[in-house]
Each structure stands twice: as structure tokens, then as C-alpha cells.
Image 1: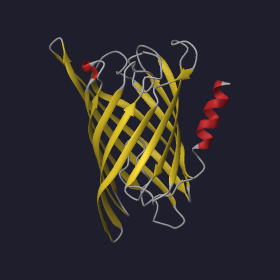
Image 2: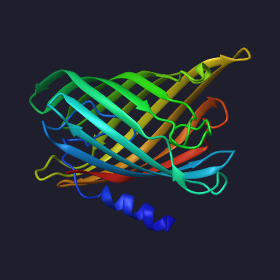
Image 3: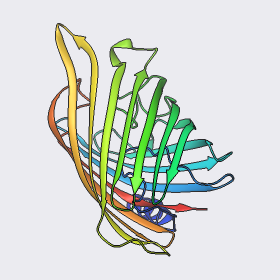
Image 4: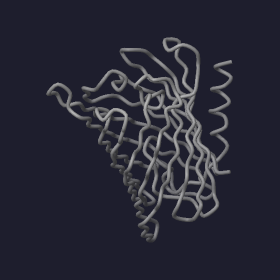
Length: 258
């Protein structure tokens, strides 16, 4: 039953998407939006290895462009872990995103967007992001991207606010670089190599700073409206509360335009 559910979620994400020279980032969010009225569905499988336990998350994400510059998104995770009891939902989230800067040139574009995301404590109280924080959590941030026919660069910076436990408030920042391996073509037929990095800083605890820095190489294949992708994330250095520290994690799945 568990395997069938994961296969269904991943299969749903392989049904198509439109891309530029580089596809959308694998782990970062994207400020580049589709046209007004377009919707995207993304399905992911996330396997997370920690010293505390190993667990899996099947994640279904759906976004809709209300206008060319404004989008809404819904995120629904399902958590699998024998250590945490029966399979059950994680923390569901909703997001609003507004693209306030756009500059297009010949074969290139630059976009900047503002983002707000709120996670609800629908999962177990595990103090683990996505799987179950036990608290409401809100993110405010800014996204930026530059894409050309030969290079893609994406960045995101923002702050997580956890009103129920201010020790979990966190500064987050991410950077991604994408290189296409094939010449531009229409319909899309492209292989993209990604290198993404992220970091986080939380409030100090007992005089010690709390931080985590990570790197994630990834590979993405797009053909026509279909996209599949995978990325493995490793820590460079981390000193974080239990539930946040990870040894490595695998993110794999796909996306489509409805």
C-alpha cells in the first residue's frame, strides 16, 4: 500500500511541464511564472537520513497563476516512518507569490518575486520541518533568477517565524546554478545539471550558534511538457537542534502543467 501510494504520487508528477533553456530549480522556488490562468502540479519523493531516524515524505504541490505576476500554491505532504508510528499527513502549507520585477532580453530574462508561505501543524508534533513542527510556521522572502540559453542562476533569501516557539525562528538562504547540456530546441529536449546550495541560521542556544550549510548536485531532464529530476543533498557543516540535522537526503520526482 505504501509503495503504491508513492508510485502514484511520483507518476502524477511526470505528466508534463513547459521550460525555458533551463528548467525550474529542483530545490529552490522559482520567480519565473507561467501565463495567467496556467496551473502546475509537482510530485516529489523525499528520503531523509538522520542520526535519529530515517523517514520518507511524498509531497504533492499544486500552484495556479491568478495573473501573469501573482500565483498561489498548495503543498500536501504524507510522511512514512516506522519509528514515528503509522503513516500520516505532514504539515500542509499554502503560499502566495508576486513577481514585481521582470526584464526580458534576447535569449535571457531576469525576474524577482516576493513570497509568503504558511505551514499548518497538521502533522505530528515532531519538531521536524514538513513532517510535523507542532506549531504554525510562516516564511517571508524574496526570490530572484537570471536565465539565458547557456546559464541559469537562482537565489532565495527569507525568514521563518514560529510564533509558538521563537527558538525555531530561522534565517534561510539558497543559491542554485543550472547548466544545459544540449542545444536549445523546440519542443523542449534538454538535460540540465544543477548545483544548489542552502544555509540556515537559528537563534543561539546556551551560548552556541545554530547553523547548517548544505550542497546538492542534481540532474533534470525535460522533453516537451514532461520533466523528471533528482537531487542528493549533503551537509557541509551543521550544528542544529534534533530534527533539523540530516546526514543526507534524496529528492526525486517530476512536474506538469495542467
